[in-house]
Length: 225
Image 1 (cartoon, helix red, strand yellow):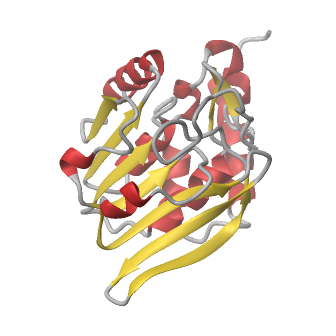
Image 2 (image 1 turned 90 degrees about the vertical axis):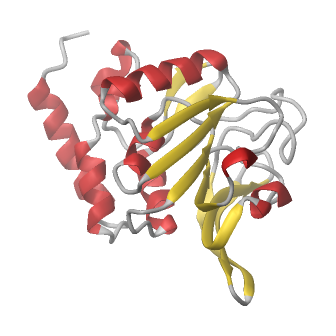
């Protein structure tokens, strides 16, 4: 494969940002999508495709999310800059980096040790000291530091897990894909004084949320679209 130059990456990034502007209105989110180097979160052999608007494999049956989905989920949290956000499914660390640019603190959990270690290393290298990466088991989320003003889930479960609602702060927002194995819907759950409200953000397809509150095994995994 030919060497990927900085100029080629910048051209691809500009094309991606032009695409994102059709759906994303928050200029802060667009600015962060432009500033965070997605190529740092993929393997060298996929670097040329870092700014394609599609998910890419990162090993262990997982993906780095499609940029449009990352931007949509981030925009839905409506971050102001002083929140503590929980992310379920660290993966490559890319989504955590996006969040870290927009809020005070990010707590992210990952069940696959090599991914957690790799993401922590890249995030530290890039200077994201407001991100804590935790290796977790079947515990859903990170209750030790709840409540969170924002919760973002990068894997799909059959329903909205009650354990995550319990970790959501008053006025907090939860963004999560929910549905069957073949296709899900991205939901925004808002915790207001009058109770929980749900907004449907559109169809999506994610790798499965495994363990408590999710699917019992990884056998039914599917690629994110």
